[in-house]
Length: 280
Image (cartoon, rainbow, N blue to C red):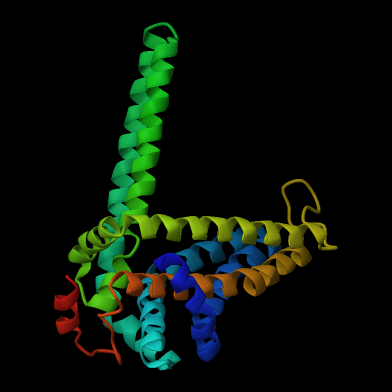
């Protein structure tokens, strides 16, 4: 099974290229600054959080394209570097950003549709005299919206992989992701099952470490001490960052396996048109 076979290859790729951990750790350190800053002073924390959030919005496409390119290079040639991270990130920045904005627009549109449906159900419920039938219909509509949200998230999640690994543009990368998922639905479901199980386990471990920490995470109602914020930030970097690296490598190896590992790159900027044609 592609999902399991790809997972078994993750340790060897990471052990041969520990540099793959560096961008992930840097990203988690950046996000952890928000947590620590909020414990110093709420106003300062809010300002820092706003700056970091804005920075992440513009850095995310660079990070996404760079890390996928690094991983694909490592899986292809056995080696990669931070130089490749920057090269791939810059090369595919605009395409990844455009695809991300399109993906976000689709999700927002679906959220709006769900909100309108909820409002209609609420009006109908109070208009017809708090009918149970209206609640049932509303519940079914809610399930449909949630299913659509999860389904689209699953189907379109590989847009950046299609851009970096197969050289698709921003618009076509979304349809390419949809096509690959549709043609390998059983494997993708297995992949998601592994991610959900692994995510649940990591959350339990992370929560357990926070629980056994000697630091009081709530010094007063509505406040968090600096020591608690530092502990939380440290655990986030030490526990969640490596998990993020595992997920990154796993996603790239899994996507490659769905393509038969035909479309590959040996260096930033090199064309893969022939490989793409062979896999479409």
